[in-house]
Image: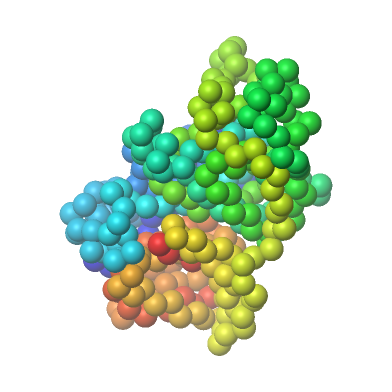
Length: 319
């Protein structure tokens, strides 16, 4: 199995903008491009291989054929492909929402829960996210705030800037607000429980809310968010590396490449590379795959040492 370059699934949601098509050359037949699922084996939107002998096939089909060994030993404990990576353009506010943990989601929805991380690629001046509550409240107060339309009085609003990173554990109430472009690494799940949607209509009707399920899974404790990466930026030969976040589910790094960087795909995990800016090539032996802004490649586990040449910023993700 060689390096696979992927074409994303594009999602058109009511809050989406046009930056993914205008700035990242994402091909779409819709007026809005809210999300690009740049690494996905989820049935709601598959990544498609665009190079080599597997061109035109879904990444999920290729992995099923090659076997789970190409995912690495860290993935053996997962029943399904473990992560999903997106680029998100929020022209308008997303709903205030929450995702369940694995136990609840598997029991109720039949898929994983959703812990995720957001890297702020760009944002308008004064842009913010909703991240949990600004003070501890009870479940009863949470329900009452939803019923009385006062929820936004209780939420923790956090100003964001380019380069911030936020880790959103399952059970954390949250929302991406308008004017934000970000990269998201998350569990492979599409389960979302909306609790507030600004009174918007879609096809003349309000979008569905999921209040009872949200009450089941939401932590109502106060939460703090700094936006700082987990690690310091380390200067290396031809590039710099920053550990953005790491947990038992995934690790997320930023590589700022001036000339070249070396990445090793060992036996523990596959490697996903998503180009956020600039362009370059990914090389291994006689294999050379171009990598432009907005593009993604999948490197199978145990593939060995790979060189990235060019001037580009990359998000490297592993399990």
